[in-house]
Each structure stands twice: as C-alpha cells, then as structure tokens.
Image (cartoon, rainbow, N blue to C red; front, top):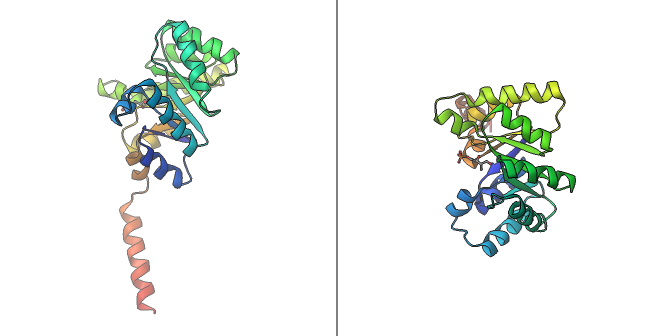
Length: 217
Ligand code: E4P
C-alpha cells in the first residue's frame, strides 16, 4: 500500500519524506489556500518545490471546470515535473479530460468521488487514481469505508487498473481500516501517519528495557 501526505505544507512534506515511507503527495485548492499560496505563478512554483522534495506522485488540481480549460491547465501542470499527477474533478467534462489525458500518457487522479458509479466511470476513462473521500462521507453519517470495499470489489471483478486512493482520512484508524478495505493508497495528514506509531505497550516496554539496561551497567 502507498502512503501519500495530504497537505501543501512543505515542512510537513519534508518530515514525512524523511521517515522514508512517503510515496507521494496530494494537494487541493483549499490546502494551497491554507498555506497562503495564492496566484497562479506562486501555486506553480509551490508544486515545483514539492516535486523537488518528493520523487513520487504529486497530485496538482485543475481549477477549470470545462474540458478545454482543464486540458490547458493539465498541460501546464504536467510540464512542471514528470511526477505531477493531474487532479481532475468527477464531472462530465472531467471524465472527458481524463480520457484524453490518459490517451496522451498523462497521469490523472479523479477527485471528489462519492459513489461506486463515479468510480466505475473514472476507471473506464483510464484514471491512474480514483479518490473516494471517505471522511466527508462519514461526516454526513454514511459509511466511507463501505465505499472503499465496494470499489475494491468492483475493480477486482472487472480487472480495472485504476488505483483506489482513500482520501479525506482524518485518523490513524481510518488508515488501517482503508488498508483492510482494499485501498491501494491512503492520503492523510502527517498527524494521522504519526499516530500509527503510538501504542502504550511500546512506551512501557521501551521504558522497562532502558531501565533494565541501566541496572545492569
Ligand atoms: C484528497 O485528495 C483531498 O485533498 C483531501 O483528502 C480532502 O480531505 P478533507 O475532506 O479532510 O478536506
């Protein structure tokens, strides 16, 4: 399973990268705005800075919602670095853009996916990744993980190559559960990744080992 970090914060990206377990990065316009990165030039520079740190896939989202606009933006984003994955929303023109970009050998991440039907369309269009937003589904009291399960089952039955990227993850437990449900990739905040380290028995055990070592010296 791949680990992506879901942020535009360069310090956090570097920290996750230094752990040696980071396979990529996802961003979105809200995450860019959160870091105070505004204006096309600054946003493009920031994507370049992220790609300079992380050799794995870096999702960069288009702002246009029409086919022509998305294709233009996708070309500009793909020119930033070879590891850019163009993030395209799950809308009619988005599916058309994903099909064309796939034909042109440009990697895509179909974002804002909330149903199995949408995931089938993304796979049919040839998306490299499909991003079901499990946290946002849970927010409205539906079952985000169940969707991951369902997509994983459909993709296995149909032999689709599109990778399931479990997005909108807000806890360490959701990472584990997404892995169990068949996600190929999880994208999550640094805090959720670091939360995987935690277990009280590890802390107690380590304290005991160090204390016993001290006694014997
Ligand atoms: C996915 O690519 C999105 O950037 C992200 O996971 C959305 O998460 P949120 O629902 O916590 O905003």
